[in-house]
Length: 336
Image (cartoon, rainbow, N blue to C red; front, side, top):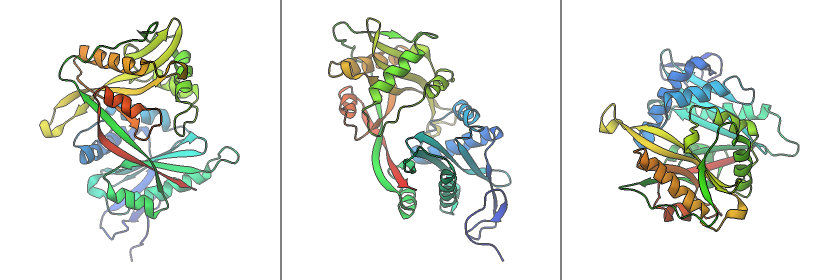
């Protein structure tokens, strides 16, 4: 008689729906990098029609976190295919981020439920700051009704919405207009790391649910393959940093336009302006300078991620610069 119920980590069990397939749930290893990329690509293609990640990004993230005791990773595999994965990691203040992918051909069979319960069990094992509630967070596409239903059945509540915003430049963008006394310069390796960290953290201090990050998080970014000093733009007044734009060049694969079609994408990882310099046009000037830098490099599509309910006026700023929302996510939270 087949055993019903969820899969069990660490061993082979019949699939809970009665399928003849057999699956293994185990901890991820660095050898899973290629399979995790293929899984992420399949999920991205199913959701958006494009592949937004790269092998290098997946491998780099895996190598940085697979041996980190503060991060838990689980994968579910068949005899020859990695079909699902989940990663749970702390984000400070008692918050824990859960990110799950299930291959489109294996959805609706209990894997997402299993991974959700596995992640919650792992979170319960970690120590948190005294008196901090454990808050599990997941972010899912707004149109994914199955994922929304799964989270809501398991006690999760929608707390925030986020957008991916995009500008598709048909020609040279508007030139930036800098406030008097403020200009822009590129990042200087070996000199600006800590100053950028302090400026960005100060700027984000009043954003919704922000918890100050350790410098180690920034240092890992500065040392990653994604970091491009020439696309890290600093708005300055003399020696003082007024604002920071962390930008990258990315690629998107678009199989519907041909198997090997790759489109260049400019990505603004973050845009921040310190409080003493707000309401003076620094953010708009920094944003338009970034657009111009990408355009000079032949990259005409530029995107970023924004809190759709931001109280700082970020959405209005990006709309004024010609950007529009093209994707939406819902962030769910559960108190454990």
